[in-house]
Amino acid sequence: MEPVQRIPRYTLLFRTMLKHMSLNDPQRAKIIEAGEIANKIAQAETDEQTKRAAIFYCLSASIEGFPPELFSNSRQFIDCIDVEDILTDMPTSSAASSTSTSATSLHCTLFLFDDKLLIAKRPSPEKGGKALTGLDSVEKVTKAGGIPTGKKRSGMSCKGVVDITDVVATNVGGAGMKALVF
Image (cartoon, rainbow, N blue to C red):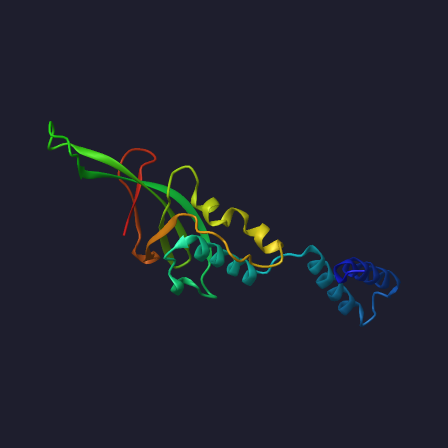
């Protein structure tokens, strides 16, 4: 019998003991607490430190140039969003119109932490940053019993880190058009 298979037996044992105990028994509170702990272990919930480690591993293993100073026990990852920056100030090489400009798209993902914003360039618009870094399956990574090794690069590259207090969001166009200013 595997140790993991014993946990449900302990929870059943604790419940049976509680059924036969008087409500005034001084050991009752300790048995209830032991039962709650056994239930938590049986559910195999991942603790916050393991989740944080898995997130930072996924980011550092898949983003080229990921800054090691972002690793912190107190830093919380909040979420990420895929964005597209349209650069319009690049002149075209057309001889007919030397004053025209061409629009170039830059595909990025913004990774938001409680105190920093990481900007990473994506190789193409087809796949989002969450999928490229593996953050869409962090639960699967942590449930697998550890952080995997040898994760391949995703083609993403770090373009900078900004302190969150230096970010200003502005409405630059019509509805749905927002800009972040650093």
